[in-house]
Length: 289
Image 1 (cartoon, rainbow, N blue to C red):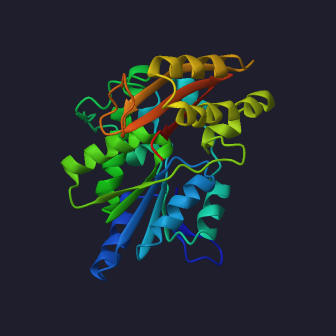
Image 2 (image 1 turned 120 degrees about the horizontal axis):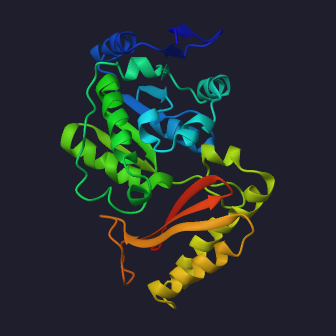
């Protein structure tokens, strides 16, 4: 994508690494702080909450890049929603300053060797178990974006909590001067966690998907009355009774290391993945609020 300016806007849009790095070098020379919001586009209010939080910096940079290396299902990559014009308008209205929108060739030159990462076991459970290679793809693109943007702070939502912990792990090892800021999950009025994938749900699946968050909040309410096995059965029965939903996994795990718990403690968090028709949805909830 060529570098350009939106009409009547101060938001700058770059498609080339050398151009955005030059622009950011000028900003850093002025001792200004940079906040960064990486996205895959198909933006919604959840993304905008990250941009608004990032306004605590002098300059806000967002990226829009559908990263092929984190999709282990080619069909999932193909059907991922792409709404660039709408995304740019939303970012502009949220006072985002700079957008980085590279193409695949810009991010992954043909002569580049694939980088591999260690996550100290955070990638072997839940999403990592069901989507092999997914988190290495996430780490690959996020580390490249961090090297390009060199932000003071980067912002991620808790909806993708396992990804958040893995990105924190990458940051600790490779970018110790950068601060990863965790932001609360933003939900629809019926409780469904906001996700770009929600736009792909058919009418029935979208209506029934609200069961996912209801089940999680019920777990929080009953955590002192039922044991973990009973809570797991409650969630599975509740969601699988739907005509279009099927639980892929439900885990109560320690939010510090994602290891499954047999008894609920002060660090317990409930994690779930559900197939809504052909669309895969994830959510999580702390059990100690």
